[in-house]
Image (tube, rainbow, N blue to C red):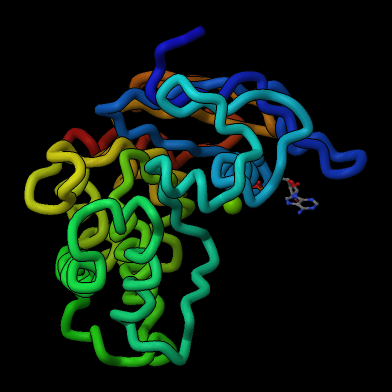
Length: 263
Ligand SMILES: Nc1ncnc2c1ncn2[C@@H]1O[C@H](COP(=O)(O)OP(=O)(O)O)[C@@H](O)[C@H]1O
Ligand SMILES: [Mg+2]
């Protein structure tokens, strides 16, 4: 058995006749940020939903720290240390922002440490502060802008003290300023330090993202999917020059991206 931190092996998902994923395999190391890219409909969100067990695979294995977690209930996966954010954000709209984050703090994993009633609130505040929306703590989630909702989604994931975060388009629909703020937060979080009491090092990350210049700032490695199969994998600057990736996904954007990363 492999000793990879996180590993997907031959993951296949059929929706009726449609093969949304076909024998997908890749790994995420403990210290890595891996970017998952590909055209619309390639299967990226399906991978995220399989990892978090919102969907069950047709076949294949998902392992976390050596353990087969395929198809385990979502709350157990969270308790093992995998937190996720979703492309479409769905908070409890009438609850205050802080209560939305405290709900995450009530999971078994977060309760392991100390006086959990106090720490749930403290940890929620900590997560909100980290994501830059502590000033909105007492507002109902319904009044938040799209950018702030994305930050709330991140705070909710953070509050579970994850070792691996799987993020589906964390920058989706954000303007360049908002995208840059979240990119910086993710970088800071990954480096570890102030946030997180279970692990001084920050969480590993698997990030699905279309905003490539931001993703290139974050990712140590890219995995590219197209029609449910991996077509390229490796160091970001090599992957984005790969002719198959350019043809399937990037088109002319690649020259701009390469010149962006050189500045
Ligand atoms: N619940 C579902 N039922 C049927 N087809 C689905 C379902 N979810 C996704 N698909 C299909 O699977 C393919 C991959 O979708 P998805 O993983 O959402 O792609 P991506 O996130 O890369 O844009 C698409 O063809 C999509 O229409
Ligand atoms: Mg998607």
